[in-house]
Amino acid sequence: MPVRIIIVGPPHSGKSTLAENLAKAMLKLGVDAYAEDLDLASPTLDFIRGKVGWERRLTAKKPWTMDLAKEAASIFLKASEKHTVVIGDAPGKISAESEEIAKAATHGIILCREDSTAEIAKWRELLTKLGVETVCVAVSKISGDGNVKSNGLIEATLAGLDRKTRDDPAITSLALLLKGKLGV
Image (tube, rainbow, N blue to C red; front, side, top):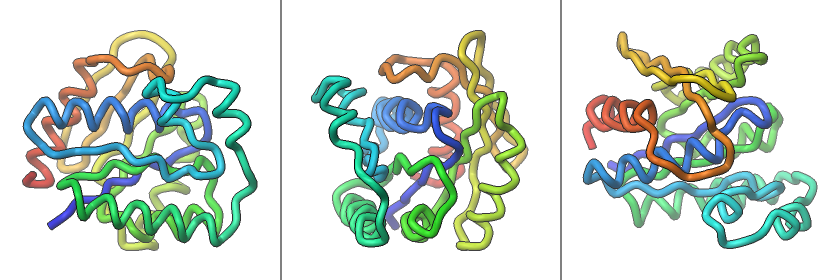
């Protein structure tokens, strides 16, 4: 069964960086994983992958519409026809459009900056309402060490999610826990 993990949380939390680095970590563990940019109004993954420059990324921004959200959900579903695990980089605001995209997910990761942890409850409520299992709640910080632990729900602190790909021990630990939890 395909797994579609949506990464949700407020803007500028590091969702895109986490999506790309987590997919790479899962690939290294032998899981066919791919990060898909679902934030079609403000795409970031091609910038992280070095395919477009910052200026091009900025000019690609556009307003959200329900048609754009339906297109993103369709992209998410189609990607899971090609990959065992698709990690979706979602928009950073709760709206009818982000809800439409999240409905296509099977699992969710909530990522919030350390100064916006009050947002976690709102995102968790949204995923619960949609029947999407929250598998991880993570807090991002600019610097320091990350850590990951699991008591059923994976809890993580992730550092340095700064739009760069890199091997990170905390993200590797997260990938390993997800691999076991999801049976992939």
